[in-house]
Length: 224
Image 1 (cartoon, one colour):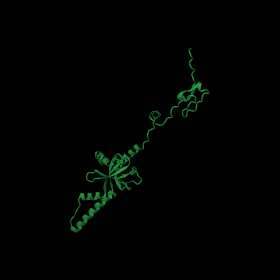
Image 2: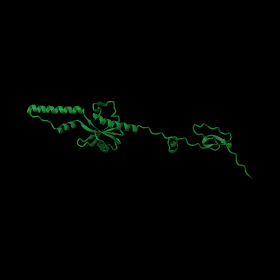
Image 3: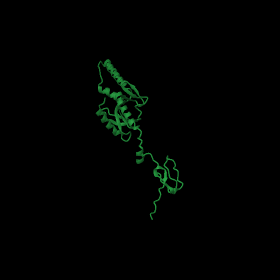
Image 4: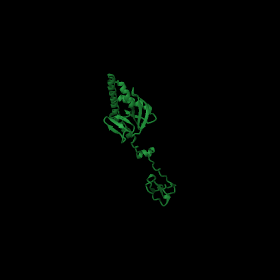
């Protein structure tokens, strides 16, 4: 299992290759592209045993290849890959065999690549057959948890502004306040109903936001 400090360091290094393409890198893991890694290692060991036996029969000498040769054959068949969960999907980057650093962007997979119906669990590995990608179970769990968290963050509905916020800061439009027209029927606000106009416009006035008419107050008497 990769250390948390190393994983964080590799995640920052991968971000350099993802700027402007898939957004922010959220989680980092290591996988392999190729055939089943267990079978690959098994066939390599069988080949080494066969060569050693043949050399013993022909030359009466036991020749055992070194670890470096076994490792070189293995990495030639199984390509080590950096797998990064981003805001928009899953990115695959070529990974250096010597220091583990990402080297270049290889492919961009959809966000559903880790949850596709074709994903297979086999022992300690998880196989994505569509992309020939193999991940250890622990690496897959790290990536899948981050993918679920990123998907939840992007799928949250936008908050609905309250009535006061909408009225004061430009949310859902409110009908404009009515404006009284002198000498005509009083305007109404939508949904309040039409007020009953007075028989004589001079005897009543419109009472503003209430949408109702009230008797016009009498004019003050002339003291002279």
